Length: 608
Image 1 (cartoon, rainbow, N blue to C red):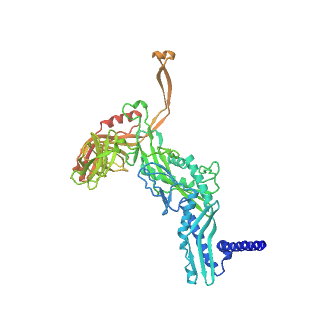
Image 2: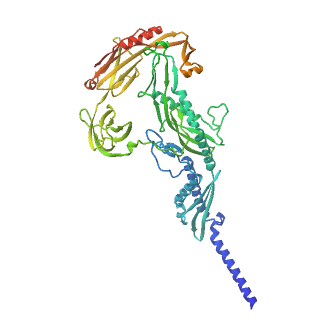
Image 3: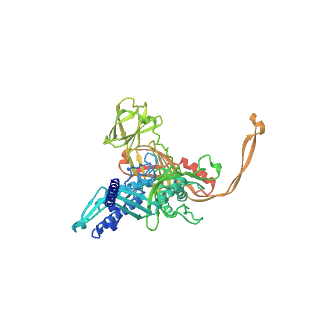
């Protein structure tokens, strides 16, 4: 009896094993591959795999073209101070900056990790795969059903592996195939290109080589620091400087490369195998600023021609200009088949490269005064005919300035910080900037009258005859100082009021100042007796080399004139008659011309 029970137990165990094997076969049947799919159904399944392959390729292309993003991070606009938004628009394709400075001066990074790229590609595939176009098979009598997809992506150095879990049942006639897991491996350099892109980015953050190449271009194509021997002012057109700089930066950026000879200026020697291309375009958002500058003109004035400085024996013009430059660079890492690209912002501040990224960078400091705006004031802005004017309003108190807002149809009702005897400032295009003394301790209203300024044509006469040679004109008033480089500039913006007008005419000369040697002495402490204030003379020799003055003052003068608005409204030409001076041939004659210049008066009148 015991043997019978043992045999029954063995049969039961065998039966359970057989059932388990059959069930396992049925459950795993769908993952055994295409070989288990009936030949009638295989074309439909192969088309599905082709859809998956195409979606993977599309996702990889999007990741590579958008700096590792499919779903873009939130957009952040730039500002007039920092032109970068959080994305570079490259041929209609928005690419998130890996490094940029926000509009409120915060350094920011947005570099995706490889895991984030994998997650984005997974979501991308899951959202598209059920839209695979299998309509032609439905027309042939196929019945196809798809379950919910769940993708798993691994980005490797030279491939992207995808395991898509999604129940897929395909039926036709008596044939049925059920596949739950769909695996493909797409040959791609996405992983390797991304790794190389991070190396290039880290090199830029560490060495700021893009900023340094920009500074080199600045030194070659723009006036920065220097001294020239001349008695005439030096002038530059800021717009022409910006055009030259943009052209130079665009060309020099494109010339950069990852490797090259030791003597190759543009070879970066980056530790990567792929090729690298750096792109810049003047059509992308950028910012170029120069200081000091008078509107669009840079002016450097001579030293040595002022009264009392004749002892120098020659004139020279020193200049020093400070540049703030911001522009984007698109970095492309590529091989024969693929390109991975990302942009970075290049920032040059005060002729120097920005500091390397500081994660603790803080926002611009807002004056304490501006944080507490709690007094409502209404500003009414008009012109002299009481026509409403739209103006930008600010408030100044004890050296702090707060932007308040802009008038709409001449009216602004806004909160002001409390202050006694502060200044409300109104600025509008085509008007003088106006300041009113106004206390904001209590609520109230202020009417502001803005006076117009008018573009006025200027005609220059020399000894009563029309003059089209070089001259420099300066118009100084209580609201502005305008400088014209004549004849390139013949229009000046003027408003009613008193103006100090000065005109300087320079002509070619060949004044040679011979080499000289001068002895100069200074008093220094006399040894240990210096403690008691005793000193002695210590002399040294100053050698001044021979100099040639090629431009010398040959005409001009000064005049103060009160200009009426009625004269400006008529649109007549401001005619300025200048007296000539003898073209100097010696340094003494040049110095005498400056004495005559101070005495010369200008003829100033409006003519039709």
